[in-house]
Amino acid sequence: RRSSDLLEWELHHRVTQTAWVGKYDEWSNFGTLQDESCIKTLDEMILNDPLFAMNRAERLLALFLLNLEGPGMKAAGEFVPGGSDVDFLEEDHYTIMLPKKK
Image 1: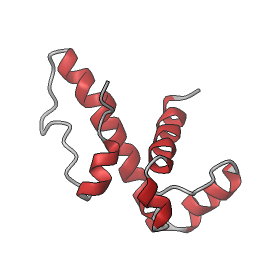
Image 2: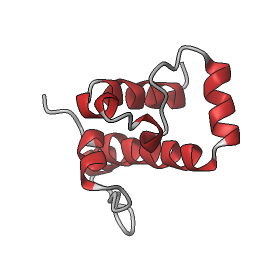
Image 3: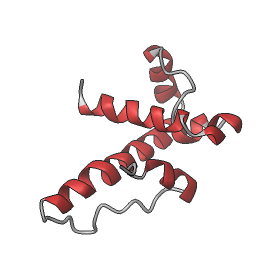
């Protein structure tokens, strides 16, 4: 699997595990569908709904920065100018993207 596929799987998994997303039908605000088993349907949403595509891209970027780049750079003793901060999400969305506690 490509790393982008894994990030997309992780996004969908986290969103489906968050009860209020389904309760309030907030799927599109995360750039996800409740059921992403049909890749054609997902592709059509991304191509035809710019807000859906933007929401998905932002959440995938947040997952990458918070869970991969930030911890990886810290472990290597490196830094990125401006950091790997995620200051572009609402707090409730940000919380869902944070690394899972072990």
